Amino acid sequence: MRTLNSTDPKQFIADFFSSFHDELVRSDEDPALVFDRYHTPDIVQVADGHRMDRDKLIAHTRPVRKNRPAGRMDVHEALVNGDRIAARYTLYVQMRKKNLAIEVCFFGQFTDEGRMRQAHMLTRSVPTDVDQAEQEASA
Image 1 (cartoon, rainbow, N blue to C red):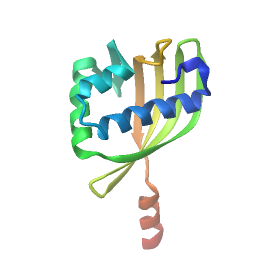
Image 2: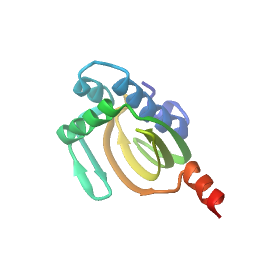
Image 3: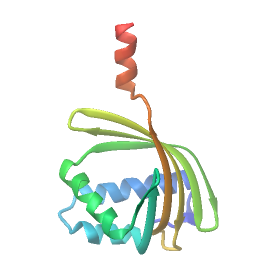
């Protein structure tokens, strides 16, 4: 795993989430073991005001593994200050023939080894390319 200060911040955050997702959905390994490789035991994540600790986050991984969504991430900007990163990205997800696009403002803290210790996220749904194509076709 790359460390926060050893790579471009945009690349670090993209690699972190894509590697975690790929290991989670492509492995039969216990989700808790995969999770712990990427997060500290005292992880706290607050997404849109909802606080989740390690146990809640691991429980959240189970439906992800079951549904095996495909996705990609476009990181628009990212800044690092010490062990902290701020990033703005769009997450594109395809699951069960449904396309989602989610804009994320992310503020996180990572260990020297590249594991996430803390995350705060604000999200909003945005139109997908498919949504826009359908709107243009019906206009």
